[in-house]
Each structure stands twice: as structure tokens, then as C-alpha cells.
Image 1 (cartoon, protein in one colour):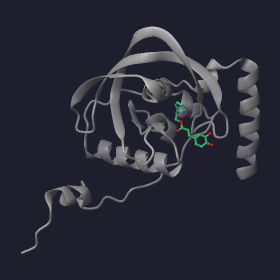
Image 2 (tube, protein in one colour):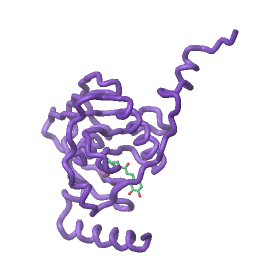
Image 3 (tube, helix red, strand yellow):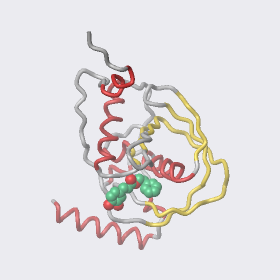
Image 4 (cartoon, protein in one colour):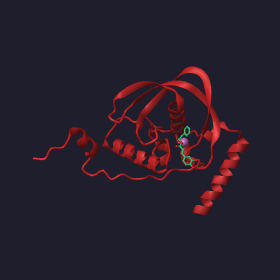
Length: 188
Ligand code: QAP
Ligand code: CO
């Protein structure tokens, strides 16, 4: 008779018989695929959950605090975020819908895994309300502020083919594009 504490079992039990996680390739600006409009997810399945797991693996490996499916060339409305220090607050948003609670804008020096090495100030609403589905396909609504609210808006932009560099002046955006194209050529 083997006794395992239920909490421990839950922590080690994989969702599937084999759950081999993968670090996915992240598209980089100015890749035109980052301009794709993502489509809503009609049914949350095991395949969706496998993609979610791989997106967390990819984001944590980078390391980053947010990743949209668009960035791994999957054009479905799904994103993952963890703004905590030690991978403690993984959050999944499927088909997210945002309403602005307060028109007051905040500034934040944003970065992006698809724009590596560049950080620029972006202004966005500080307080938002989001409705989305979780990894079980159950809907939830939450009011957000702080970094989580900023990050969520940044990631939803990805699902609409938009990047933080689009908020910058054309000159700044072009400088970033040229530098990234050069480093991409050197790696190829
Ligand atoms: C989006 O970005 C975000 O340049 C998530 O060399 C970021 O995780 C929203 C990263 C800030 C709001 C504020 C960027 C990693 C990670 C880089 C990220 C880099 C390595 C970016
Ligand atoms: Co990004």
C-alpha cells in the first residue's frame, strides 16, 4: 500500500500520459507573421492545454513575463503571463476582452520577446477589466492594475497583429527594425 499526499500527487501528476514540454521558436520583429490577426478559440481542448504548457516553458526559458500565441506563430487568441518572481503566478487568458475602467494613462518601459534588447516607454490605461476563458475553458472576469494590466494589454495587441514599437515614432521604430534585421542576418 503506497500512500501519497493528495497535494503532492496533484503537483506531480501530468495532464497526459506523456507530457513532454517544448520551447518554441519566437518570431522577431519585423517578421510579417507578427501582423496576423488571431482568431478566437472555439473549444479549449488538450491540444490547447499542450500549447499553453509549451508557451509557459518558452516564456520562462527566455525569460519573460508575457507571451502571446502570435509570437510562436499560432494565430489563436491565447496568451500567458507570469509577473511574479519565481514562476508563482502563471496566468492564462483565452479569448480575452478588455474594457478600460479609468481613462488615466500610465507610463511603462516595455520590452518584448519579439523585439529583443529594446525597451521604450509606452502609455496605456492603468485600470482595466478583463473577461476571458481559463485553461479549462471556464469564463472569468477580473479587474486588473499595475504591471499585470500593462502586460495583458501588450499581449492582446499581439493577438491583433500589433507591437509596442507601433506606439513609437517612425524614426525610433525604423532604427529598431534596422538593428534587429542586422542581428538576424548575422545569426542566419
Ligand atoms: C511584455 O515582455 C511586457 O528585450 C512581456 O532581451 C514587457 O517578457 C509587457 C525580454 C514589459 C509590459 C512590460 C525582452 C527578454 C522579455 C528582451 C517580455 C530581452 C529578453 C520581454
Ligand atoms: Co511582446
